[in-house]
Amino acid sequence: MIKFIDNLLNRITMYRLVLYYVLIIWLAGFVLSFFGLLPYTPIALVVSVVFILGVCLSVNAIFARVFDAPSNIESVYTTALILALIIAPTRSASSLTFLGLAALLAMASKYIIALNKKHIFNPAALAVALTVIVSGQSANWWVGNLYMMPFVLVGGLLMVRKLRRFDLVLSFIIFSIVTILGYFFFKQSNLLSISKEILFSSPLFFFACVMLTEPMTTPPTRNLRILYGALTGVLFAPFIHIGSIYSTPELALLAGNIFAYIVSPKYKLILELKEKLLVAPDVYDFVFQPSKKLSFKAGQYLEWTLGHSHQDARGMRRYFTIASSPTEAEIRMGVKFYPHSSSFKKSILTLNHGDKIVASQLAGDFVLPKDKNKKLVFIAGGIGITPFRSMIKYLLDTKERRDIVLLYSNYAPADIVYRDVFDQGERELGIKTVYTISNTPYPADWKGERGMIDEKMIARVIPDFKERIFYLSGSNKMVVAFEEILRKMGVSKKQIKKDFFPGLA
Image (cartoon, rainbow, N blue to C red):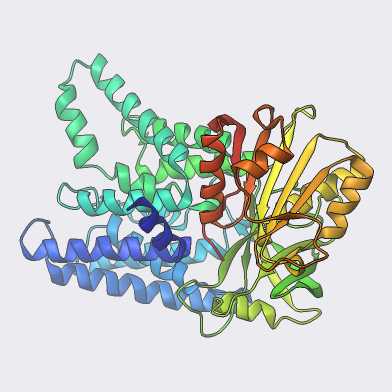
């Protein structure tokens, strides 16, 4: 069942999944309103969401044209639905003004309140906070309702599993609950009643799964994400205040966003295509010239945005590991194309010299350990080799020696990419590189390993495997298979690092 869910999630981009999630929650609220389980009528819900969506679409279209920026329609729909879920639905003129102002500010903030072309704050949270100042009205986060909870919780768990952000969400939930219960414990309140209120009648889970996990406003590494969750969790407590200003969910998130920006400044790069190289059957290496120098660690990834017409369900954004080394001036991206590739991939394949693409959201913990004496094993399948190209090229350019064994699996010899870098690493740094192919019949002149990487192959070519840290990169299915093999061989979970970014291409 878990594998089925993972395969299903892998077919949907993170942004599309968020859109589906908030849409389903709103539809659930719409149905529940017919049975009187929500304090709003179906008409009020429809009027509110249509009005918010209309304002969001109109304002976004205007700002996208003024700033000459690519418009992500998924983001517009998602923000509109989030606003509709946290601001009380209504048909009165005064409340529609509140809804309209919030929608206007949410869209405008993406373009205006930004540094280096990158917005700092969660748009919905910022819009609500600013609207409270202007109008005096506030959001009631009506999505935090007992009858809405099953939809929020089930969908939220799928969201977090897709994003692999359980560390962030758990940190937030633990610190928020402990802070609130600790406060009421000293107040000698009924903790059971307070616990029920937090868990079943507050926006805790919706806030954690949707608002808190937005990649654009969260820190890029695990430890920083945990701190971000803890800070926001403490500030989520409604009794926290500065003078007469008491904390609200949106203010807690904005404070967290500021922390995230301080510890991991965000920016957007405009990348100009320099070369497009066919490096293997259906595999292209895209070499871009960045608008400014990008500082990153070998093995990290970027979010790439390419506006194009006729977008499919996977949208205009993708995550790809940076194939180039931090020592190189250009930014490389290796992409595998399939017969039924996404509209994004089809569009990027049509790029010509001088065409531009936007990159942002530098992130990832899949990097070399600080301890240079650690023995490492890199295991990759197909185009999953890109982070290892980045790492080994970096070691070559810095002349840094490390004890590394690279196991690289492909269908056929022609599918091997970046062999020049790996062979150079073997010659100059002593990095042991083992190539294996799985397609039969095997070529007569093939001198490498044959067959899939399995327990026997690993034990044979890496006798000291229990002393090493394993880095696994490839398709989700392949990485899971590699991990199962290693665990059966007695390799501890702490010795296994997996390349991950939110969403497949």
